[in-house]
Length: 412
Image 1 (spheres, rainbow, N blue to C red):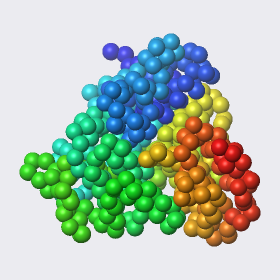
Image 2 (image 1 turned 180 degrees about the vertical axis):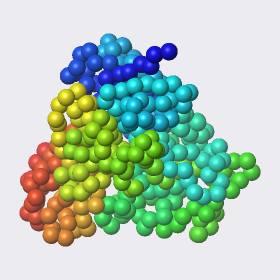
Image 3 (image 1 turned 120 degrees about the vertical axis):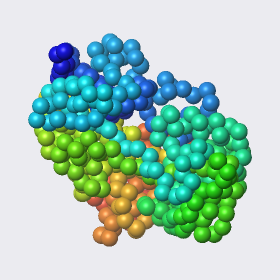
Image 4 (image 1 turned 135 degrees about the horizontal axis):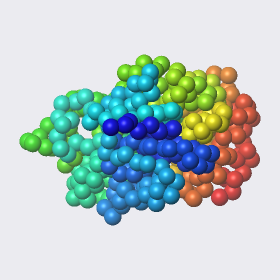
């Protein structure tokens, strides 16, 4: 049987779908095949820890990047529920788990990341949940619907969002974090205290500076043991981080950064110029923060998918976007632009107590490198994100900023 060869072979989900869109805008006829290990069409992941997690009527179709009709109309072939076993760069083929071989002229690796398996004993209980894919949340949201006591492990974006949803649905919530406060990898002490007290007002309990020793129970998780004692629970949500999916890239000999993924140039090309990389697993040089790293956020995957697809089709676009993160929790919306390690020198504009403020973060030279806004008005998220980018491009001193620099935010 003759082997099929495609001009563009895309491996992945969300970023790969946007790459297909960018390719088709530039090349109306080049053959495109998108391979995804999940059974669903590529979809947006942020809702999985927000509305979709707690609304039993939510479906994968509501989070799809594009409908099936779009793929059909744009002649983008799909191969779902399919895992790629390896990449043979010399022959320019990918080998599927079933042994089939598919050729490519240009290959995109948008393999993303997987939920990091918790290291504590009892992590294999059926009611210890991670959140990464639709297959993860379908049993979890049933547990939430039944109510009871939830223990959330981790005070990251994901943990804070999951805890928020449980609180809104009347569950008893305890958040266990090995760090001294929520969002501690980047948040100032003032911001950590704001988040902590916001949750405590709704009845949440925090356990900081503690790791999970074990999860115990008879056939299912019934309690969680920390250094401070034992917490009873009906289920556990493990928001313990992610592991980059770089195995394919490693095995075919692409350059890898052990911490940040597959190394790419400014055009998102790997060390093999026929292979592009986008999304969580792409280790790129970020001009806005002045270092090489990766970012695990859907907005970055959207941008990089588009740039990689465009360049696969012959463009020469340089990836240059200031990092963007957002989170929804309680009745609040957060937008962050810039380097989450931007510095410990901070300035608060607005009223933190009311939940309407901007916090600027500066490096040792007092130059602003990160801007974060918290608001009750999610509708203005896109405009706020644009307005927050200005300080990062201006290279200005922290003390030179006032509320007048963010008229759009404070006018609402």
